[in-house]
Length: 258
Ligand code: PGA
View 1 (cartoon, rainbow, N blue to C red):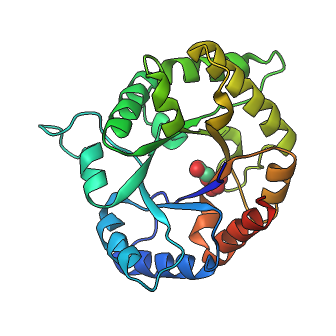
View 2: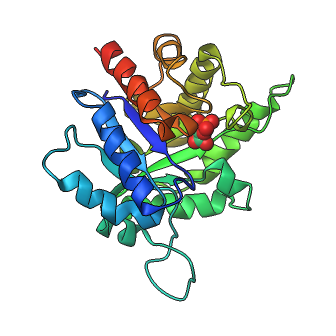
C-alpha cells in the first residue's frame, strides 16, 4: 500500500505570498520522490493559487491538495462554511475531518460523520482524525476510541472504507512541547482500530484501510513509526511548515518503502 504523508499547515502562513513560497520550497524539497503520496492541506483561501502552481509543468512530483475542514450541506445560508464540492472545484482531493483542534471548538462525532459522507460524495478522500485526550490506567481510552470510530463511521457504506484514511492523533502528542506516542503505542492502537473496524463492518478485509499516525511527527521519529509501528503514513503539523524537515520525512519514508 502506498504510504501517504499529509501536511497540515493549520492557520499558517500569514500571506498568500508566503504560502506560495512555502509550497514551492516544499515541492523542491521532495523532488525525485516517486513512491509516496504527498498531500498538502493549506488554509482554504490558498488552495486555488497553489493548484495553479501545481499545474505548472516544472513541479514534479505531483503532490495533491486538501482542505482542513468542510461543511456537510451543498449550498445555502451557512455563513462562513465551505462545501465538499467547493473544495473539489478549487483543486482539493483530500480533506481533514474531525481534527482535535476543531473538536475542541465543539465539533462532535455526529458532525464528523456527516462531513465524512459529504466528503466521499464530493470526490474527496476524508482524513478522519481520532485520538484520546489522555491515557488512563484502566484503559478507558480504548472505549473512547471505539466510540469515536463507531459514531464517526455510523451508517457509512462498506465500500466507502477504502476511500477513507484514519489518522490516529492522540491529543496529548500534538503541538509544541508535546511528546509523540511511541511506535509501539501506535502499533497496538492500529491493531485495535482494525479490530473495531472489522467488528463494525463485519469484514476481514481491513488490510486496505490506511491508518496513519499524527502528533509531533518529525524527521527523527518517522523511521521508528514505519519500522516498528507499521504506520501507513503520517499527518504532519509543525514539521510541515519547514520544507527541509518535511522533505526529509518524505525521503526517509521513500527509502523505507518496499
Ligand atoms: P504537530 O500537529 O505535528 O504539530 O504535533 C499534528 C496535527 O495536529 O495534525
